[in-house]
Amino acid sequence: MKRSGVIVIALVLATALMIVACGKTPDKQETPAAGQTDAPAAAPAGEQQTAPESQPAGTTEQAAPQAAAPVGNEQLVPIDIKLPKPMFVGTPTNIAVPNLEKPLGKARPAFLAPAGTKNVAAGKPVTSSDELPTIGELTMVTDGDKDASEGSYVELGPKLQYVTIDLKAQHSIYAVVMWHFHKQAVVYHDVIVQVADDPDFVTNVRTIFNNDIDNTAGRGVGKDMSYIETSEGKLVDAKGVQGRYVRLYSRGNTANELNHYIEIEVYGKPVK
Image 1 (tube, rainbow, N blue to C red):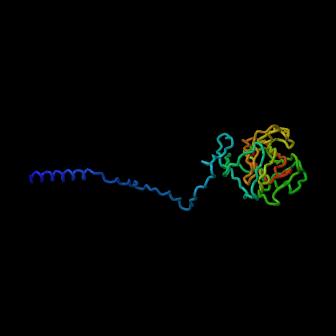
Image 2: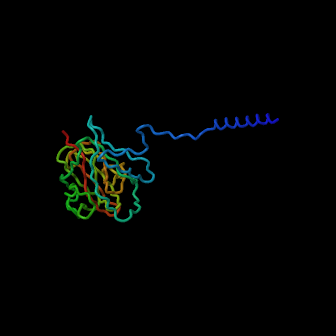
Image 3: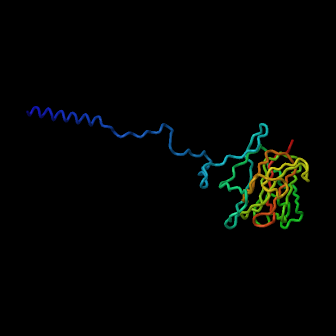
């Protein structure tokens, strides 16, 4: 009987040892391969890393760059637009304007144009439907000063007014950027941009922007949207249209009946 008991105990111990030997041990973590690391790559020597800009609520990705219509095999590069500092004063009020463009909520994407494109309006002569501006001089429209402070803008009279820039030669025009008064959040009415071959706008007139949806200005019904003035200005894609003269219309704004221009830039290249 004792011998049987010893045998039973031995079998129980042997079984227990087998169970322990077959038990699982915790998995080991994988080791990164040689040269692999979870840390961000260091910036090249002399180059400073910056954190990605935070996007406004509701945005999911950066807007793709706008591109001018391709011209042959020309390389497209971003045009260099120098922006003035934002100068909003106070809190923007609700603006009840039909067909109003919603703010982008982030910086405007870069605009691509053929290499060699530059601001061909800089320092060029300006004429206007109002020959005696209330404030400022017409030369301010192309003097490079985009600030919204006093002394940086020209004020034209009420109703429909325009300014015309003489580029002094035929140009392929890829973009027009205009700054009205941007110290307050206002909307200018009936904004129209046209290009022509002659100063009277009779020959080869083309409209590249028109937000006059009811033809109040008598230049045709526009399909473009109204927009709130900001320090970025309004960029109009001219799609490589050719011309010598650029004319811009407006008919007052949501704050008063007057018309204001701080700066107009025309990005293009001379026609060869």
